[in-house]
Amino acid sequence: MPRNAILCGDALELLPRLPDRCVELTVFSPPYDGIRDYGKNWNLDYKTLGAELFRVTAEGGVCAVVIGDGTKDFAKSLTTFRWAVEWVDRAGWRLFECCIYSRHGNPGAWWTQRFRVDHEYILIFFRGHRPRHFDKSTLMVPSKHAGKVYSGTDRLTNGGFKKIEPKAVNDMKCRGTLWEYATSNTEGNRTKLEHPATYPDKLADDLIQCFSKPGDLVLDPMCGSGTTCVMAAKSKRDYLGIEINPDYHHISMLRMRTEVDDDASLF
Ligand SMILES: C[S@@+](CC[C@H](N)C(=O)[O-])C[C@H]1O[C@@H](n2cnc3c(N)ncnc32)[C@H](O)[C@@H]1O
Image 1: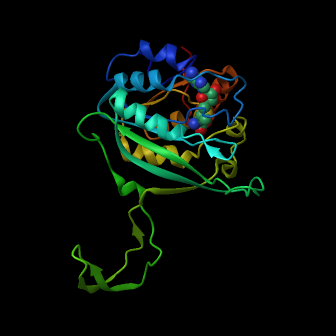
Image 2: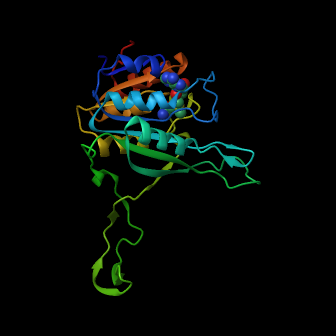
Image 3: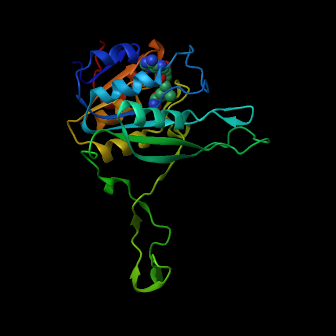
């Protein structure tokens, strides 16, 4: 099985070549609702993809999908929700969480008819009883009330109140389900920007740190500019990327060489 490689080809043709249960973590973003032009209108069978990714995932392994919904005639496509229900009801996945990826960055288009969309979803699926690795200590965010002393009351389940002892608020706190990032346009990586729809390096890294350990195999079946593979390699995870478009495959290989100093091999 290829390991520490980025393959050029169709994920739906190459994934069946992988053995069962060989992947600990998958992080990827599919093309959805024709929102971006990736050089060709690639046909994506998300049902087969969900089943195939489930087959190659180890017990307790995790698959994080960064996805959103297009809008047509004022109505949302519900693509995200279709994927979630299909993958859970039929492919065998369980949904650990649906986080919101909140994007900061350039103001973007001028929206007059509807709300400006500044979020996507991060669907986090897992296989089996529970995720085999979960370390949210790597995902701390600054506390808004750091340095203050918290005192007051906690609400009880019966509606009553309980007085709590005054305590100092920590500088950092655990992240919740809202994950905020500047867009990758602000990262200043010109090679990466040659791909039209990348996610931030930090987003991939946060998922890798939280749900995998060094030596695990991290897969991105639609790796675009190679963000997941680059971040996995930097953290001593093994990686496997697949990209159908030869131009984007070239970008990912270039990034791997210049950012990780590792020669991704061609399959
Ligand atoms: C949203 S982009 C991924 C970007 C990536 N996360 C990054 O940060 O660079 C989706 C990618 O999926 C690729 N793709 C579409 N269908 C594919 C398929 N069947 N197999 C492999 N790659 C595919 C597209 O060419 C595109 O580069």
